[in-house]
Image (cartoon, rainbow, N blue to C red; front, side, top):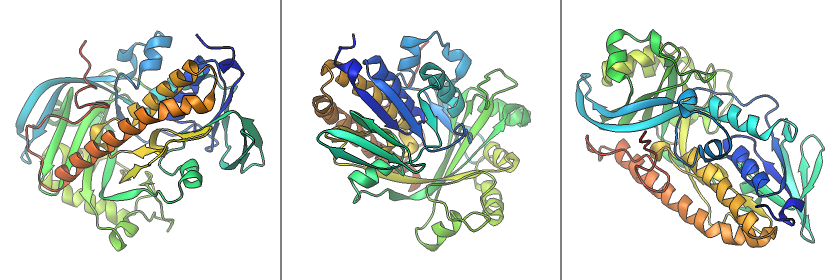
Length: 401
């Protein structure tokens, strides 16, 4: 039950994506008055990013709504390794549920409501005077609060202000990504990938694919999409700089969106996809506008700074191989809400109690994901190894129905 002191606390969450919305909902549950500020002026886009569900990811949905997971996620029953010639090298029964960004984001925003969600507001700084926090936004807006939560992702303004020495560290490879409607696949490719998470392991890279809902969340047989990723080693410096420079000459940082990747890179991708199993090369050939996600590590020594904190990718950005980034952000928010409720509204005490557990969780997730990535990209991963998917441990994302 929310305390009377907790109900007096005003919270500002900077960043309105999945982590920020989860934090806002759990803090409101703790009795706080919460405002969310998102720098993007329009609805955040779904570029076809697949999300492996974990109990932490959907904890708020499960406990506060009647949402049926079957309506917002695609089920897989099998985990497979596919040889370069297309034959199945190994498979095991491993049930996961997978979704896309839009169904999760839309559902969380419906729970939070639009009244206290502010778009087009980029935080550019904050001041603390006698325990009172004041935020400044690029629009000239000024806000005050008792607790400030930075949930603003890998390029976090909060982390830059609080820990300017901590910078994202390039992992040495990038993921080419895309998705294609299942009904656009050939019958042979569809049958080889149906209801499975499928991996292809090469000596210097790896690829994977799995089904997700379409952009509006539909999961019917004629609506699902097939999401694919191919992780490729890219040297830092000139090679990486050219890859992340768009068609109009703009240099991107952590990702290059669809319609922006230079044509010669897309041509090379399709030409070299012959090294992958035929199902993968078909998907890549049929994806009109693949995009790029550069892989980084971020690891902070602190998450709490008096009445200010970092959560999600603003604090720890783990490589994608544990498929738990969204779950980690959601868990940071849930644990923060519980700490605030338990502290009877004492924000600084709440953050002191909350920080050690979330630091430990972030560190182990980054370390486990880094180990998986290094082995997958450099020929040290064995066909038949179990997936590393999970938040607290591998396997805790499995859904047994």
